[in-house]
Length: 50
Image 1 (cartoon, rainbow, N blue to C red):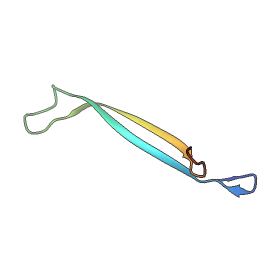
Image 2 (cartoon, helix red, strand yellow):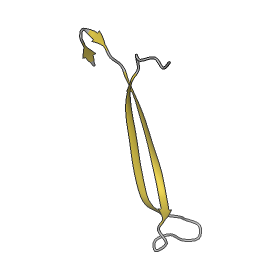
Image 3 (cartoon, one colour):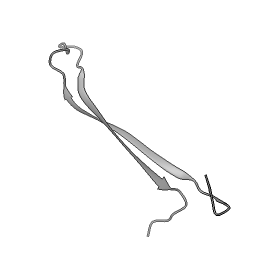
């Protein structure tokens, strides 16, 4: 991406969280996940942390 004639680089963090097990479809050896939630965050790569 370009902003004010300077190149801006972004970092993207993406993670998934599994919540619970589906009791109806799972077996003893094979567990099936009930729900999955996703979270992502975009940060400017050029900024410095103090």
